[in-house]
Length: 598
Image 1 (cartoon, one colour):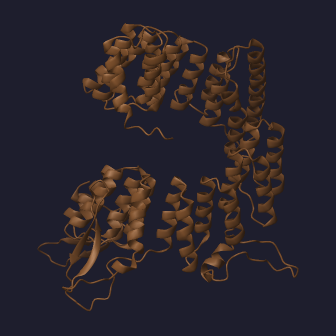
Image 2: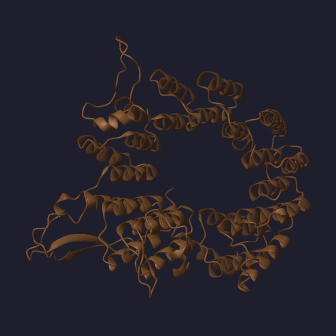
């Protein structure tokens, strides 16, 4: 951006142009409205272009006739950083707003609470919420006639400082600390979904009910908290008490299950929105807990109350039935969805069916020492894959269903797990999707699935070819490549690939390296330690140091378990010399910082 861009023809209708009648100057003065800047700022924030967003703010500050920065400006910025889970910059925005003399309004506080929730900093969000609820601080004055307001200071999100602000008008009645509104409460409830804190959620929801602040979002979110806490009975009770019941009484009039003190405007709006999301959330919770009868009864309850299920409702149940290998019932429900409620089964529903029916083998299809059991598992899974391919053909034949990358990746993964190998069919599928213009062969997710499928078949050439088809591989694809090499017995190749990647990083070749993660090093160290020699232990130690010093990656519980198991109970020559002992002690020291309670 430059200041000259302000004079472009694309300014909004709110921009007022005033032409001067001065013959000598002939200048045009532009009075820019705050909405112009905020509209552009919000556009960049919505697309996660935070660097561009800051350029908009810089332009606003530099432009002579631009309005000053306001709480709305910082609200938009805070929202943007919350979306990308950047709590550090969320706090920096609050600190800068304070330094610029901005007095936060309730919109800005709501944005801050929402940002903390998105960053999984639920305790910090609750601190802000509690502060706003504290009536004793609102509009209070000290003995010297100064009005107090509490100011958030962005130092690790831990401190709240009190700041005094002298009021020129001692009779000023406006509260500096804003009163929380319904959005404040609902946003905080959303946070309790993440940490499944039903106790706090019920407490503040009772406050909302008493203050006539309850709306359909409250019901939806509170049900989500109850489901996240596995308190399904409470979730059903919430729906019974706070959801519109569209059944009719004996006189043919529609009955309402809403409390008598429910806000009339919200009640009228609520009749147009029967909380299908809340019912779907409860149904999905039952489905994920393998309580299929309860999930089906929830669907029945929805229909009895006149709450029309949507595609998400049916998709959750279809996926659960498919996971239980009740494929025929799942297909029947898809037909019922279309014939009874007029909801056509789209690609999302078909993908849920395919992923569900092909998932169970991962859980109970582990290889055993019993050849007969393995043959039965392999045969059953192959049959499911055949059925899945038939359903895929139905998808192709339907004009309104377009298979996508999830469809393709799911089928490739399943074909790769078949015994004997069906990797040839997987490769053919990639070509068909590419030729049909559905998904390009170099798609990152598809290629990664093909790499793993080739690894299951020990197809090293296929692994390398699939990886090189990816235009810009990510860490997940890189890890699949490393693991594929190790599974094919090419551990040295995996180490060389990692070394080349490190060289590109150290040589500042931004386009030539991929940032590894702890999974990358777990794959490598696990393969090396299985060799069981002292030289392998030394190489694992070098990798461990490289992980921490070069990339700044600390071990997780999985890596600690692998290293300690190899060193302590590996049953080979590991862990018997002084160097191995020092390696083990280093890992134990690092493991102190991990959460071992989960």
